[in-house]
Image (cartoon, rainbow, N blue to C red; front, side, top):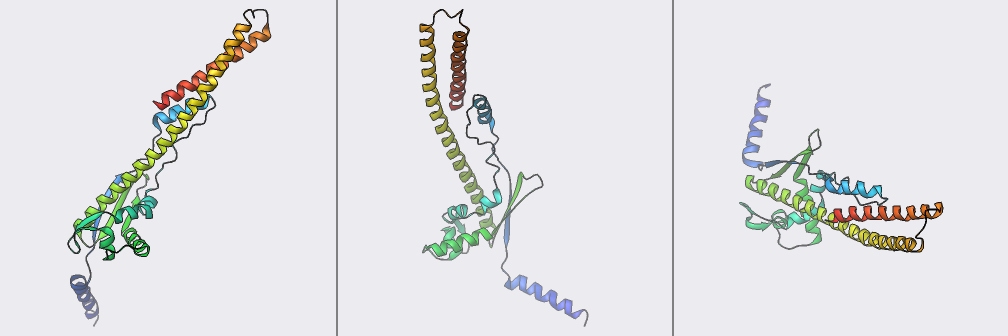
Length: 234
C-alpha cells in the first residue's frame, strides 16, 4: 500500500505529461545594457557650464530600466504587428492573430493580446545590473526563438528612436543658444568698439581702464561660450 500510492502518482504524472499537457519551449537570450555614456556631450556640457550655460544632459537619463521597457504596452503593441511562421497557425501570421486566433482587431482584443504576450516574457539581470537574461515561452521551439529575436530587435529600434529624439532636442537647444550668444557677442563687441573710439587716451583714468577691462572680459567670455557651442554642434 505504501508503494502503490507513489507509483500511481508517478504513472498519472507520466500520462499527463505525455498525452495531456502541452509542451512549453523557452528561448533564452542574454544582452548587455547600453546605458548612455555621455561622451563628448558631457565634456561640452562641462565647458559650457564654466561660462554659465546649462546644457541639457543625456548622460544620466538613460540607465535603461529594461524589465519595465520590455514588458511595456508600447513594445507589446509593436510586437503584435510582427508576423511569424508557426506550425499551428501557418505562415506569416501576425502575433495578434496567433495570440487571439482572430483577424478582427478591437481595443479589447488588442489589450488581451498584449497582456498575454507580456505574460510570456521573463527578464532578470545579474548582480552587476548590466547583463540581462530574457526568456520567452511558447508552444513551439522555432516560434520561441523567432519571437525572442524580434523582441530584441524592437527593443533596439525603440532605444535608437529615443536617443535620436533626445539628440534632436539637444541640437535644437544648442542652435538656439548659438543664435542668442552670437547676438550678445556682436552687441558687446560693438559696445567695446564704440568705447575705444570715444576714449582713445585712458592711461590716466583708472575708471575708464576698469570699464575697458570689463568690456574686454565680457567679449572674451562670450567668445568662449560661442566657440564651445559651435564645437558641440559640429
